[in-house]
Image (cartoon, rainbow, N blue to C red; front, side, top):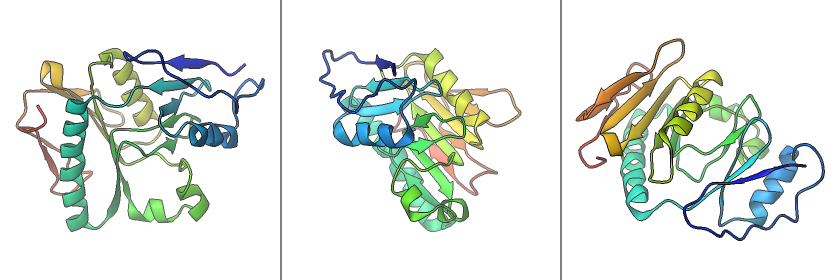
Length: 203
């Protein structure tokens, strides 16, 4: 059967499993229906078809997520070459996993090449840029695995922000990850012209 992994420090969670079937994996439509049935849950699906339910972001994490999204949105509006997505957005990667990065950006040409019905669901596309912000319920190892998955599936630049250790892990294809210690800003060039994420109010 499709398995259900619950990742939370706020147990128990009430989860409606009525849309699950006895198939080895949910179909894309079944997963979409499952998420619609449980709109208050943050849900991802890994490449093995396992469903991962995460707690809502804690207030401090949500605040920092907002600051990251705000910087990216302001830059994107001025740059006008791409579209910005917040942490509620899910994307279906080429390996079949459905992931919701804390912030994402996609070139407009790639986004606009999707059909309207694809855009309205968990779009079958890997973002060009993703950010994951470590919260107190995240292990660093699991987030590193997620970042490696993003890069393996076509993401061109990924930032893993570890506030606990004042580090930013920078991921790019065909390169070892780079760790920046207590940086004041993180340059996202050349992938994103003239964009640097200011870290002062994110730490």
